[in-house]
Length: 325
Ligand code: AVJ
Image 1 (cartoon, rainbow, N blue to C red):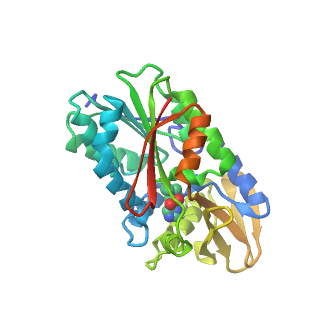
Image 2 (cartoon, rainbow, N blue to C red):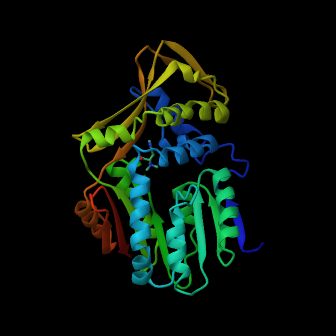
């Protein structure tokens, strides 16, 4: 169907990232070692993330889904008809609330899901096409940077760019600022940006959400090593690492690391890289920042994104900010 297209913005074979693994070389060559959270999301990682979203301890997904279900129609009413562009769309499950709210406005609707995982993007685009036969879908496989640079500058009637799940929490303060700048640059004046944010809350709730009793988050964290083995012909033995996460209250961020259980050497042939690991050494795999809503409104405002409305759940655990360029 011409109303369903999926384009690949990165290497069409999906064999390499834009930076060709230079970030992996840099991250594993420094002390302490680190990896970009982008490497969580091979097809298996995206699948594990979907499982995380259903865990009893992982409140962000269902809380944000409740906000979207409750206020999605209000979002659509505030912006009027828009093309919907989603960064990090994954399975597009929560997005359905928005799709339905915008379809109810009675205009033809175009949805542009963007994700680094081609497998999950293709599968969810096909499913959406079946469930919403009127919807025009143009999926983009690529990174946020690639996708934002690729956005058609003249959408009609307008555009809502959205970034849900508090994925913006993966960026440190400086990267977050650069990201918001890229968003403003990609938008025309009058277009909208909708941002989902996990909010600051007691440590015990946060730590349970990132170290669940079924070990799904642990499997998600360790899977990054299998992904590197596949992508760069490596020989990581995932059983030589364990999941380690905690809430860093001073930084207001959950941190995930992998801790090496015994000293050994790993090679990544496609990168020409040999890495030594000492027992107890860690790889920092993710930060997940927890936000203050009014501080983020101020930051968005500072970039020329004017807050239009903000919503939260009853406990104030998760927030959604609609702003306008
Ligand atoms: C998809 C980045 C929002 O930080 O909560 C879930 C990823 N990591 N459990 C998050 C994640 C561990 C998630 N984001």
